[in-house]
Amino acid sequence: MSVKDKVAIVTGSNSGIGLGVAEELARLGARVVLNSFTDSEEDHALAERIGAEHGTDVIYISADMSDGEACRSLVEKAAEHFGHVDILVNNAGIQHVAGIDEFPVAKWDAIIAINLSSSFHTTAAALPLMRKQGWGRVVNIASAHGLTASPYKSAYVAAKHGVVGLTKVTALETAQEPITANAICPGYVMTPLVEKQIPETMEKYGMDRDTAIKEVLLDRQPSKEFATVGQIGGTVAFLCSDAAEQITGTTISVDGGWTAL
Ligand code: NAD
Image 1: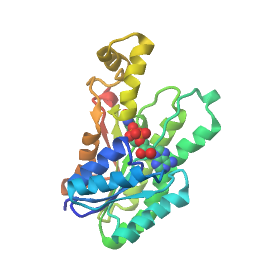
Image 2: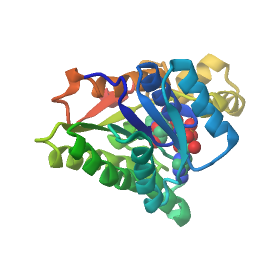
Image 3: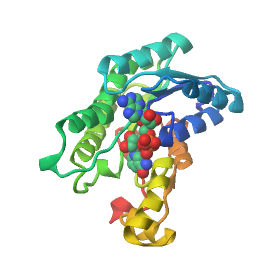
Image 4: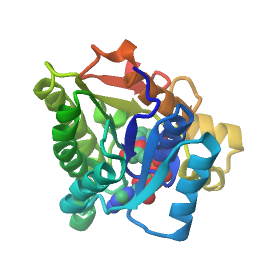
């Protein structure tokens, strides 16, 4: 079994890691649903561009992952369009940094909704479809922060630990079916948002680019290299391959050794 002709939904995929995962799956011949909460011409053009580049069907479906009903309807719309949903990659996520005592309640609620509850809703909608067709892969993009903590990231760390827990339960509930559920735990990944932080960090600490990257941004990443969105996409593809058939309910770290520390 390969991902060719499989239908994959990637939540939060008009930028960053989600976009990288979607492009890798399209490159391997999957039919892909891109998603974010916006509904612009650029979003739909992006889907068309990726589809044309790789000779496969790629569509964009707008759905706000902070809204449980919208999460479920994303899966339903994808199934209506393509006839089935084989691969679900729960990737949408946001971040906010503040101490617990001053963490804005609205930010806590949004992070839990988008980074954790959305995966519950999309998985709940996708499992019956996967069961009916007799094959399915759920891949949750957690984080090194699903396994370790950092100060000032209470909501993010709580949500990502929650994603790892949800992954394990999904795996146990599907253990005797041809469905697997796993979480990928990236360390620092090079995305446009991270790229933007480099000049900001250089200015803040008066450092050159290399020092700002190695000593500040990659402080906890022993390899002193960013992971790439293509590597996360490749890991998703591996989890969808035959070699990964008996891999379920686990986490795969792509973190340059962060969690070995
Ligand atoms: P990003 O900001 O580039 O991408 C986030 C995506 O989620 C975007 O497409 C955005 O439009 C979408 N999104 C945000 N709110 C949404 C909503 N309400 N509904 C639908 N879509 C929404 O960030 P990224 O770095 O690519 O992060 C992607 C995932 O990877 C997140 O879950 C993040 O926690 C995780 N992650 C990132 C890193 C990293 O270093 N970049 C490391 C570990 C884990």
